[in-house]
Structures are given as structure tokens and as C-alpha cells.
Image (cartoon, rainbow, N blue to C red; front, side):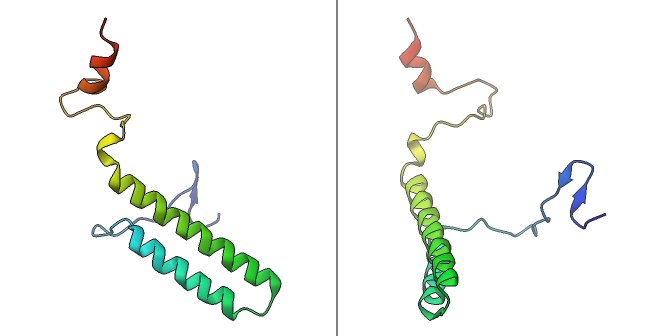
Length: 96
């Protein structure tokens, strides 16, 4: 049996209790690291691969920044703590 797989398929490694999700700055650091690797690479294959990784991390950083800036405009699919489904703002739009 392969490590990390079980009856339900591959499983993710457990994160430490104090693990924090990466933020936009972390993604930008990774992007810069891959951009540096791309500029130092000698193989066209590696240059292309590192540039793609750098772009992917830039996109993640931009997405994270957008989510942070627009958190109040995001509609969650989770029920609020009081058990209601949806939010009051959305309910107001559909009341007839």
C-alpha cells in the first residue's frame, strides 16, 4: 500500500495545530523565488516551468488580496451560527 492512501483514496498530510494558511505576501515570495529560478535556468523546459509556477503564485496572491478586500461582499454557503439559511441582505431582495 502507498503511504498517504487509504480506502477513500489519497489523504492529505495532517497540518500542525498552529498552521496558518498562506497569505498574499507568502504567495508573492514564492512567485519571486520561481521567477529567480526561471532567470537562472538554462533549459527552455525549466524556464517555462518556473515561469508558469511564478505566474500561478502571482495569481494566488492577487486572488487572496481580492478576497481580503471584498470579504464583506462574499456570500458564504455556510449557515450562520443561529441556524438560518442565507443572510438577511439576500432575504430582503427576494421578499415579495
